[in-house]
Length: 316
Image (cartoon, rainbow, N blue to C red; front, side, top):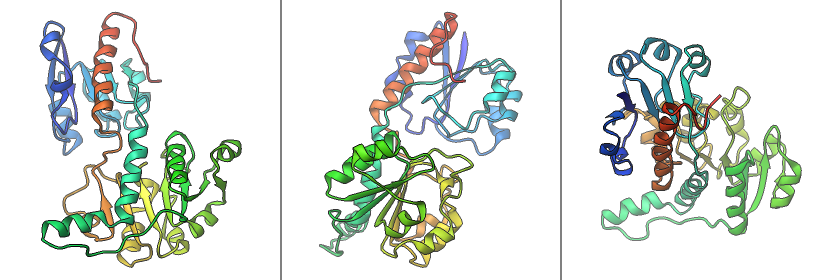
């Protein structure tokens, strides 16, 4: 019997997608609905498990955790890339790491939910409707505005196409911007500083790396328009959080729409939660029924393939 820990199932829905009784002779599942408060807690709670089913970049599967879990043989993550796993330590321990497919379109969709939410003051108007008020703000139109996209990969390209459909001028920058791809999309390449100066909305769609960590700091906020909205559905540390809070607090920019943070879950007393010009979501980018169906189904498929001796979707 293989003991499987299903981590960070915040919505408690693993059993809605997987008929666990069907596997009762092969696997025993334990569901963890909340994040561990410390690595020590994780070590205690996960002792004795053979396999971990994890959601990408929630619980950190560190060197200490991997080396401390003596029974651990398999790690299966949602998606094929998870920077929270110490792959080098897993390889050293000869732990098999597998991943799953993932739909990227939900992240592009949630990006536009944040953009529209900010431009049309959706949060304020919804709150005011429940208090009995009617038409308390003035919104802004998208048509004719400049949308600046940092990173024109799969998600950035989807966001760009929607921006064009709204009649926006779309500009882009990244360190390795494909100029021919930008041209095909009708996107104007700009330097980083020019994008920050010109854009009415800036949306981040790059992979977190040393090159992109703290990409946006006080310096960048100083050159943005005061009417600019900043959107981050990529990774929290791409923006210097302290400088972001200052910029919002001092009205250096009009607002920010965030789905990702330095620390997740975001602490209850975090300053961002109390800023009126911050529209916050709890990292919903990939959180859809369709994606979760793929994740959990393929996690089981991967574990079956491992036990059959032909592992699928190996993460290297």
